[in-house]
Amino acid sequence: MLRTVILAASRSPQVERLVATAPFTRDLVRRFVAGAKTDDALRATRELVDDGLAVTLDNLGEDTVTPEQATATRDEYVGLLRRLAEAGLTPAAEVSVKLSALGQMFDEQLAYDNARAICAAAEEAGTTVTLDMEDHTTTDSTLDILAKLRKDHPSTGAVLQAYLRRTESDCRELATAGSRVRLCKGAYKEPESVAYQSAREVDKSYVRCMNILMSGDGYPMLATHDPRLIAIGEDRARWFDRGPERFEFQMLYGIRPEEQARLAGEGYTVRTYLPYGEDWYGYLMRRLAERPANLMFFGRAVLSK
Ligand code: FDA
Image (cartoon, helix red, strand yellow):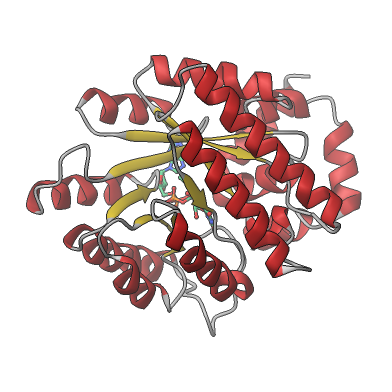
């Protein structure tokens, strides 16, 4: 119920204005987002890499409605990749890209062209690109674009969401040599016709999908903060004899940093998903919807002002 309300608020410009101007917002944003500028992103990346973590950077921006906005996002990524390489932060740092920010909603070809330019820049910088996954109406289009991109840039990765009923089958398709798949639970409000609704069903689906990916020939990226799923991931890594170069754990910036450090300390590859940019609102609201404890952090921030 609470999740539904927050996800609805994440699409409301009125609530966005309220939150954006509230005095407590700065602290809250700082916990989950590296900052507004490319320089902030580079600084945070350096700190994480120095701590032994890999990084995937996300330039926040979801409501792209004009070709100019899409091109500006592409240019930001291309510039970011150049600066990451100059700073010696590749290949430890890669980028995550939302196709909606590149124009997918109004011009799929434009989104593909922009993504291709980012993949080329990543290759030049010696690193990789992962396509984020958005709501279920975009899954087919995103996987089609992935297939096209992988013809020239085979290391391009994608996200699959365990809450979708189709995902086991998508995992089977993508558990092939050279394929990079980030498996997450899924962050959007989806109808029962396409998605499991209970946490238990989603978790069971996650484990089935993990088994397919870990027993396959691709490179699994297990994106979760869930202690039970992480333990199962560690178990499957031992079972399928996957060392730190053959799979990785991924978590979001600001969430369970001590667990990220623990896993890295144990020798696993751990990648932190690091968002930055002005357009933090939708991202922040999805994090709040996921977990009451994040809301309590929000509450404490309000009360401490
Ligand atoms: P969940 O939120 O169910 O939490 C399970 C358990 O984890 C909790 O019960 C608790 O024990 C522990 N936990 C979680 N948060 C904690 C905290 N703050 N402190 C302590 N313990 C905590 N989604 C999507 O739809 N498309 C995408 O492209 C991506 N991309 C993506 C990349 C990466 C790297 C990650 C980690 C996640 C995504 N997601 C995503 C988001 C994802 O779908 C999901 O919404 C969140 O990761 C939350 O799900 P969890 O698996 O962490 O479990």
